[in-house]
Amino acid sequence: PKIIFSGIQPTGVPHLGNYLGALKQWKDMQDTAHHSDRLFFSIVDLHALTIPGNADKLRKNRREMLTSLLAIGLNPERSTIFYQSSVSQHAELQWILSCTASTGYLSRMTQWKSKLSQSSPFQSDQPTISSPALKHGLFSYPILQAADILLHTATHVPVGSDQKQHLEFARECVTNFHSAWSIPSSRPIFPYPQTISLDSSSRIMSLADPTKKMSKSDPNPKSKIFINDNEGVIRQKIKSALTDSVSKVVGEYDSVNRPGVANLLEILGGFSGRTGREVAEEIKGESLLGLKTLTADTVVDGLAEVRERFMLFGQDTEVNRQRVREIEDIGTRNARESAERTMEKVRRAIGLS
Ligand code: TYM
Image (tube, rainbow, N blue to C red; front, top):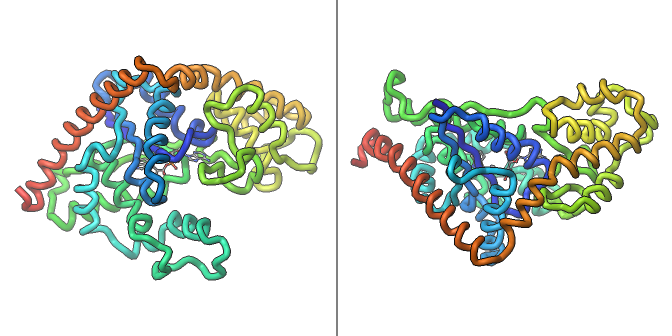
């Protein structure tokens, strides 16, 4: 049986990149899972602490992310949905893994560098490991992510392609841990988790600048579509998406010379599981305006149910509050049980019990 695990940071309503790159896959995997498969989806609030300072906002964002996960169609009776911080074993395993994780490897990873240069854009030097602005939590972020995955002995991890490096690191953590504690390969504690990433739409780009990925931290609201945007807003944002003047019609799929057009093709294809290339072939010769209209129609249709459920579950009513509490309780209970099962083995293997 498969154990499927993935996580999302509670840093605002998910955007189209999150949806097409990851969340839609979560829902599809849930709906096609074998009955013996198990699914865990975590709202990774400990990771969100790498942007510290606003407790009320984090409280609100956690709830809003739970609403978002219900809106995309996760079923709490089938999938365990939980806050990472409710299961303290995540932090416990992170420490244990950090004792066998390589600092050199972490220092070569890209996320802390890009986050650091984002937060201080006027810094002229390359961000370095000795920069005072680099906090240890951001640096060791990938170890906590590895702990998330390994704690639930996940076999399959559906993510967008920006997470591939982190998954590679998680596999490295398996090797390091087993080797340091002489765990025989015939009786491993952790399986090697496999990255599940789509060929298409695993990297959706910003609508305002298609050379950058669509990102929650981009302050420009026109750069992204949120899963709860209404029809008018979606149409407006796609209409103003930056394309090009290379040609007035859609030709070959060309993400290098026509990144804006390629991005719309990816978005269009993402809703029906086709690659941007396939879509380009199909609508070759269509005008750019036609492409935008088609894309807007598809996004509006594709998100209609999600938006409806978002409105429904997001309402501040007693019924919803009660339901959220129940989902939180059940998720915490299931995730703790799964976590403790692994931790008992881990503690025994390293002499802590
Ligand atoms: P996060 O919260 O940044 O994003 C959640 C998911 O959305 C995907 N994604 C995208 N996919 C396509 N195009 C984009 N423009 C785009 N932007 C984001 C991400 O790849 C991700 O799958 N480190 C993780 C959270 C995490 C996690 C984990 C994931 C913590 N522990 C364990 C998997 C397993 C993150 O920050 O995702």
